[in-house]
Image (cartoon, rainbow, N blue to C red):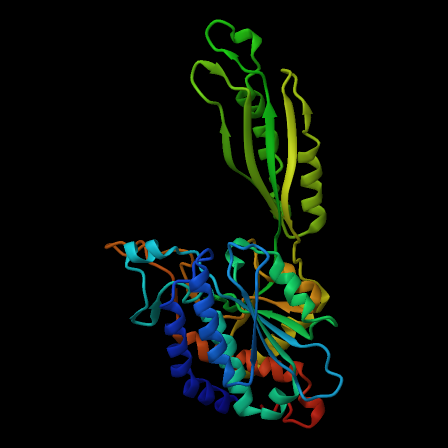
Length: 413
């Protein structure tokens, strides 16, 4: 089966890359609704040959394009839980940036450059390749299984309604959730993501008292100075030992030089893998609200929250299935944790979850290229599609219980 997997993957890779090129050549910046719709139509067309029905669902935010759900109901009786395969339609590159940077599909050496090539149109095509190979190799497994391919139209800005719409289509939960963000190939092997940090976002506002800076300075309360006194305390919340980061991102305040500033605000985020660590830092920050020694008033406002995906027993068990598949194929694989957010943060409650299931690449979110080669734009490594797809297929075969249905045992594969 190992040789057949690789052969089938190689057979279908050229078609996968043709579809990928069509997607990459369409600008799908998050706020470019016509582009999002166009990529969605191409994606629906791509999966139609596998028997998937497309459903376009409007986003709650009217500035975003529709989410796309591709569904295929399995023939197995009582199969209420689908396998959920997750990608996204949007990229971070506005059309004018792609044009000014000359950032487009370009095949060079063992890389393909282009917007979304790895993040995350490459992930979408990995899903297609996995399903295509599985359908050819073991059609009975493919036919019996219920599948839901869920594509977020606004993942790059973490649109929360996508998770709600996905959950509505999985009322009994998911057999598993596989998120096809790029999975780097490093010295340790192919990386599979098994946890992600959660995030809390805050605005901290200081209300002082305005006054003429020359003739009436002492009557004023300098909001910038008062808020500045909190900065060392906020920075001290950082706790590398517990993987807690606290980043003050923006500070805005004041108006003109001859006025004591009466108002200043800053925004910050904090991230951690463990919910209790994040909650402790949040409590410490929120406790800073109230009057300052200098007479100003501090207001702490939570702007948003993204739950951590800390992994756990179910994730560990699911990763072991992928480890087994990698061992059979002779592929090195290693687990990793990431500080960045993905749809895994929002969907992991549906069922056992793994992330980083897509192809390997690099420089996501970058469009620049310098003559000295120090800056290179986003790229995908096409040579990683087939081995990663083979691992995903073999793991799905084990997960879906092929051994118990009389299929070849793992040793025979």
